[in-house]
Every structure is written in structure tokens, then in C-alpha cells.
Length: 160
Image (cartoon, rainbow, N blue to C red; front, side, top):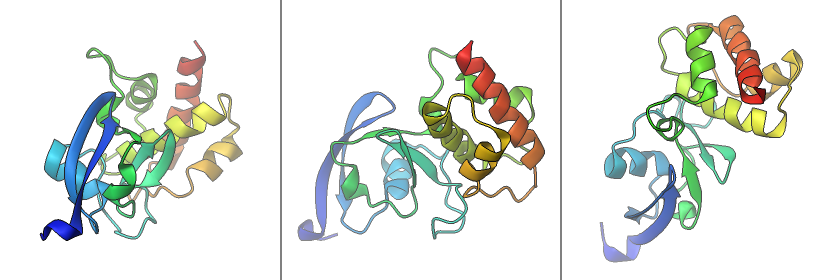
């Protein structure tokens, strides 16, 4: 990489200030994997259509496969790895385990982070709101009924 095609960025990643030198064309997903060893968000479609690469930027869900790393400068990023605290799963993670809201698990991190954004905006979502909010996330194993149950349980746990 030539120096004119890269730049330094600094951001908060899962509660910790970090920095990296990124190519101007690199996605945040590539940087998270290469620089920080975070593989929870996974590239699947490469077009922002499946939700497997979902992460939160300033609390808003984005497709990591489309989000340029340079745009992360100054932002607060949350990955699925950043949800657990002190060895305790986040209530959303616990709900997905409790309700078996996954099969192979490939899409699960994206569903969990999209659920986090949903519940931050709608703490008591209806089933229709859950379906609408998660419509951009695809599960090839078709675990949708269990995912819906996990989101409902997560909402209960978050209110408790």
C-alpha cells in the first residue's frame, strides 16, 4: 500500500480506544479481522444483504462488509465479542442460547447485534416489529421461530 492510499484511524472498539492504519478502500470488517482478531462478524454475501457482518457503529447497526474503515474514525464500534462483560453473557446472548436461536451459528452474531439495536429503540417489540427489524438478516438454516423466541426472551431479560 502506498502511503497516499492509507490513513490512520482511531476509534473505540468494544469499550477500548484503539487505532489502526487502514487502506482507503478497506472495509471495517477486514480491519477488525486483520488488526484485532475479531471474527464474530462474518462476510457472507459481500453486498450488505444478509446481515452476517452486522456490527454497531455509534449504536446503529451497519453492514461491516460495506462500511469503509476510514469512516470509523472517532466512532464507537461494538462487535458481538464486546457484549459479554466480566465473563457473563449479555442478556441477548443468554436469550439466544436459552431459546436455541441458532443452528449452525454463522448468522447469529448479526442477529444478536441487530436485536441489540432493536431493543434499544423498542424495548417491548411486537412480533411484527421483530420480524420487520430482523428482515435484513438471513438464516440459511431457517431457525427463524427460535430467533423470534430469543428476541422476545431477550426483551424480557433486558427489562428485568
